[in-house]
Length: 398
Image 1 (cartoon, helix red, strand yellow):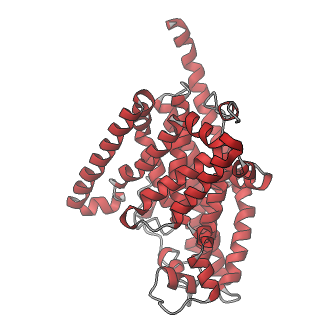
Image 2: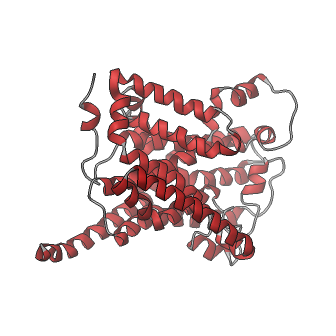
């Protein structure tokens, strides 16, 4: 029995971190990069998205019909990001160190929006300079979701307001998930406060409210299709908020979950890894994304509990991936697209993908130091000054 260890691992303030979860985020970001590398390959695109029904080769069988396919499960990795955000954002409320709503939003703007804006600007400039036409022989992902478009005036408000519509999503398409990160952030306190105060009753109430808001929003969007298309289907914010709710539940009951999975020398952690990956490998039909959220929850519990999985996530290279994970997520597609446009007449798509992936890892560190870290520090500085200004008032009131 290792009874006290998981409890000792719990953050006691909003500033402390589960460093193993940083590693998990890094691995998920790398999976997104690998997925987009594969989508640049015409044969892979035809198999996964297209209509190629011919017999699989030995390599295709390994990639598509074995657990190896999890290395290219970018959709699952994005769901994990949402659940992980819900977990991390919940901790200050559960540790009685919640910030004011204004400081919370300022922190999210600095953490997410500023790096997003810089990445979109860089990508838009590159797209305007070297893109604007389909690449002969390239995959449907390159020519359908990349820089074949031209910049339009409505692209500016789409980017600045994170509208997630056709005027901007092609510039750097992974940023679609950041739109929902920011939109859910606008009402996240309404998710975590009932969960923190009322437990299961709060969870049920929030889940019911999100379900109702989603269907009401869906009806409104259906009646105002033009506005919905321009604003990016607003009702989906309530759908993706459900994954934040899963993360909030994990945070609320983390003591019990991490204790149970750390028991018996970490066997529970291994079991949770197996459970999470099994859920991800199973086809669930219409409930696929919901089940992917539960699989993500299992992996988060395993990552934060004592065991070999957490120890691996704490190793130097994985921690580095975690540190630069957001920067890597933002810049890898512009690098892939830029490499395709510059090199497609000189080398194969496979070689281009490998070069782009290596370059992305190198430039992720640069982007982290030049943009992401300063933005994060700016947010901490602003919120710290705000707290300092309010402190004398609180002291006088006390």
